[in-house]
Amino acid sequence: MLEIERMADWLAIVASLLGGGAAAGAAFYIVGRRVQRGAAEAAARAAAGESARLLEEARQRMVLAAKEELLRAREAWDEDVARRRREIDRREQGLEERVAALEERERALAATELEARARLERIAGLTAQEAKQELLRRLEDEARGEAAALARDLKEQAKRNADKEAQKILALAIQRLAAEHTAESTVSAVALPSDEMKGRIIGREGRNIRAFEAATGVDVIIDDTPDTVVVSCFDPVRREVGRLALERLITDGRIHPGRIEEVVDKARGEVDASIVEAGEQAIYETGIKGMHPELVKLVGRMKYRTSYGQNILDHSKEVAWLAGIMAAELKLDAQLAKRGALLHDIGKVLTHEHDGTHVQLGVEVATKYGEHPVVVNCIAAHHDDVAHESPVSVIVQAADAVSGSRPGARREAFETYVKRLTQLEQLAGGFPGVEKVFAIQAGREVRVVVTPTAIDDGKAGELSEQIARKIERELQYPGQIKVVVIRETRAVDFAR
Image 1 (cartoon, rainbow, N blue to C red):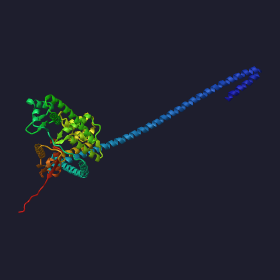
Image 2: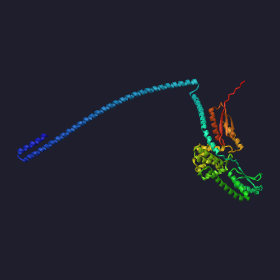
Image 3: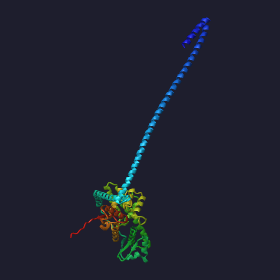
Image 4: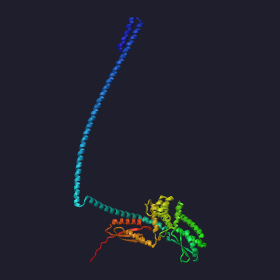
C-alpha cells in the first residue's frame, strides 16, 4: 500500500517537472489518486477473499472434529450396549438355570408329598378328605365350646358389673311409683231405684231395649238380680256410652225411642270430651309437650282399654314415669324416654278398627303425626320386633316389663294361665337332650333339666339362649321369662 502511494507521489512530481505547470501536476495527481484507490480496493477484495478462505477452512476443521467426536461417542455407546447385552444374556441364562432347578425341586417335593400322604392314609386308615372333615369337625367342636365358654364368661362379667347399678336404678324408679292396678271387665252394672224400672227399660214388646241397644251397640242384660241392670260390650268406649246414657234415662224417667236417641247422642259427646280431657291430663301429668292433638285423643282413648286386667292408660303413664326416672339417672333424654313410653301401646286403641298388630298400628300413627324417630323406634322395638336403635328404646322396654310384671299389675283368666304354662313347657321340651321341664313362679321362670351325656357345659349355654329366643317368637306373655338349664352329673355306687 505504501509502495503505491509513493509511486503516486513520484508521478505527481514528474508531471510537475515535465509539464512545467500546475494543471499538469493536478492531472497527474488525480490519476495517481485513482490508481491508489483502485489498488486499495483490490487489496480489500484480496483481504476479504483471504478471510473467507480462512473461515471456510476453520469451518471444515470444526466439522471434521465434530464428526470424529460423534464417531468416538458412537463407538463407546455400541461398546457399552454390547457389554450390557452380554451381561443380560448371562443373567438370563442364570435365571433359566435357577427356574429349572426350582421346577425340579417342586417335582421332587410333590412326589414326596404324595408319597407321605399315601403313607399317612395307610397308617391312619382315612383318606385325605375324610381326615380333613374329621379335623374340621374337631375344630368346630372346640371353637363352639370355646365360644360358649367365652360367651358365658362375658355374660357373667357383664352381669356382675351391671347388676349393682341396674338394681339401684330400678329400685329407685319403682320405689317412687306405687300405682294401683285395675281389673279387666267387659260389663258395667247400673243401679235401679226399683225393679219396676226394669219394665220401663224393656218397654212395650221390648221396643225401648231394642232401640237402646241399636243406638249404643251394647247388650242390656236384665235378669233376676234385684235393682241392677248390666250393660255388656267388648268395646269399653261403647260400654261407657251405654252406661252413662242408661243412668241419664233412669234419672230422667222418660224412656222411649226418641228420647233414647237424644240421650245417647249427648252421652257420646260427653265421653268424647272425657277422652280428650283424659289425654290432656295424661300429657300434663307426664310433663310431655308439643304432642299432636290426634295423638292426645288416642292417648285419652287408652282410658277405656285394658290388657291382662291392667288399664292401658294407667300402665302407659306408669311406664312413662319409670322410663323418665331411669333415663335421668343414666344422663339420657328423659323427655324422649317419657314420650316413647307413653305412646308405646298407642296402637292398642286402634286394633278394633284396623288390621295389624298394635306395634304396627302404633308405628304408623306415630310416624303419621311426625313423632321423633327415637319415639317411633321405642314403639316398634318394645316387643323386640325390630332392633333397638338407641338406649332410650331399651329403657322404655325395661320400664314396660317392670310395669307389667310387678305383683298385682295384671290379671288373666285361669284357663289362659294354664294354657300359657303348658305351651311354655312344650316349647322348652322340644329340644334334643332335654329330659324334664318345669314352669315355676307363675310362668316367669322355666327350669330345663338336660341329659348330661347329651349336653355338655358349653352346649348348656347355647340351649338356654335357643329356648329363650323360641319363647320370644312363639309365645305371648307379660313381662319376661327366665330360662335356667340344669346339667347334673351323678356317680352312684352301693356298698354291700
